[in-house]
Image 1: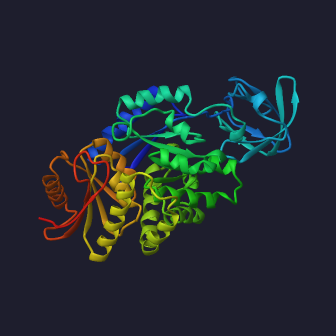
Image 2: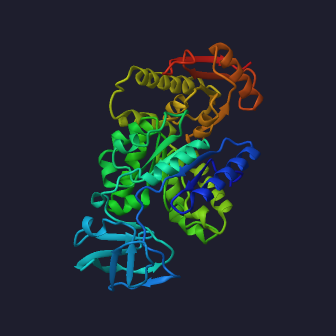
Image 3: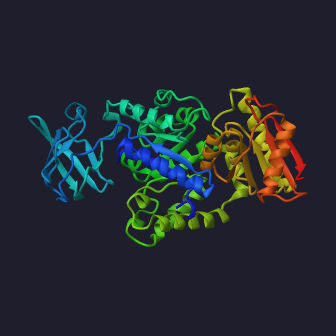
Length: 452
């Protein structure tokens, strides 16, 4: 999958034990090191995920039938479901609708019978394993992250994970509760947008996070389906405007779980996400349980590359300026905004061969990537975790440098490394973007240099 185009590997912690997830983590890290690729690893915390008790085999749920719902962890049958949510009977109301699994099965709470809800099946289907239950987020009294999330997170922080996705975020407070050190000392926090509350508090969530994932599965259950594409566009635009990578996720190539090629609609979905400006596109079940994960990754990469060729690079920067949410309130952020804008304009007008960014945290790279320059972005950092985190950033080639000390010598080492790696040639004009010192908290230096 790395050879086919995978830049980031996501480990879903809601479907496996901690021990098995750690074993997979080390296998992926070993494969990336063997391939000499700065692959990022993202662990996706379960959050307050609600599931049905396990079915023995496949259960056919008939439309119009009545289902008994009780809180607990016991087995489920086609007539009676257990739900691992202790507050089920107090948090739900008559008339509430629940979606199951991938959203194809819909129930509506019909009446109460002693210690259970009786729900009518609006749309039926087949269930197996332990399918998820989507309960409207404004009904849930569970918080994110959960205690279990924090225990899992501690284990992965200890082994040096690069990114962590927080499920069912409803406000910036949820992100602050994670309590991680800022990147690169800690992993990049990815806020999953999948609730109505997250849409309402979007600006604060983006500002508090390192990146955002548009989790279209649960978000599509929370909002009307006709609004979902517009939410996707708005979230991507706002994220990119603030220098945060945006990940578009869920059912990108769903048919390829069992088919060798995608549907036409899926190919269009990927291309449109690219046209929207998304930083990354994500696969889930297609590579977790699909028949040919390598083919899926290769197919997605081909579609994305072709969409990149048709991207409106000229119109993107002007639309980005219109999307700025507010003027930066911190001097460091304001200076970085001005300098990256100047770099994009100068690099475009002069026709440089590369934009070389020198950054300890990766923020400089993410800031210039907002403008989607048609020029390669070479992101140098002395932090291995930062280099791997930059695998999530649009258009960036992450590269490790031994140290950031004296800026003049650091710039020369970066240029020689870029030349020796074949990214630029002697005599090429290069834009170099960096801070004026190793401890500067802002990007304040732009130089135009010839490659030695």
